[in-house]
Length: 84
Image (cartoon, rainbow, N blue to C red; front, side, top):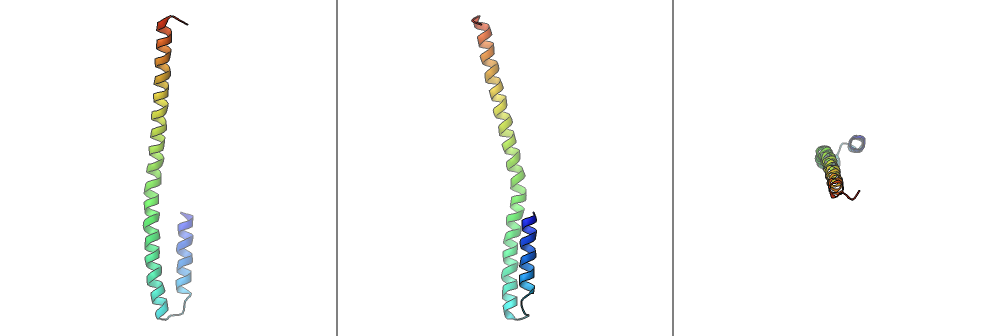
């Protein structure tokens, strides 16, 4: 979040520091399209990262449950075989 705000601020300073000429309009147009791309990437990142974290946590919980089930099955088989 901080990086996106910083990039946005620097871009605005660079654009508005130019003299008011035709070049400024071109740079402003390019700058706004670049900022739009950054905004889209930033929003996609804001949506995707929490979902990836949730998916990773779910996968870890599922793996832990499978490991517990495997251990329990092995204990039951050991106890029922009478070789303990």
